[in-house]
Image (cartoon, rainbow, N blue to C red; front, side):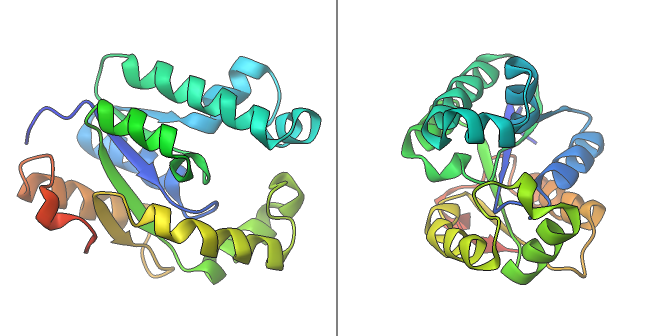
Length: 186
């Protein structure tokens, strides 16, 4: 496998990004970084508090700043993005500039919504209702499709199975997939 610096996991909120990134990091013996956790620690507030107190636009500025800083760091990492991070072109450019491998966890909306509801929908200020969440999910899908690798992440697969599918894909493709693999389903 090529010496990949950063593997970036994207997908909708509650798609399993953090769990899969944590498992993939263990499988590949890498450091796992959750972008939302980095921002929360820096700001000493939850993502919900940042968005409610300062607005989504301010949060997105903080998010891009944190993403840029962590991608400039050395070391081999698996990064779990926030659900909206990948939707901003400036963030995709940062990720592309660092030649990161990008993985989209394509999780069905109903499964994401079940997880959001089970956790507490009020912790997700941009998707407090089913209708809000569905609209956001539909708006973001076209951006998620820009990731190099697509992994179908339904409720029949656990984080270990998904992480192993990603690791297997990376191994078979020598690390970085070429353009022919864009959108590949496993």
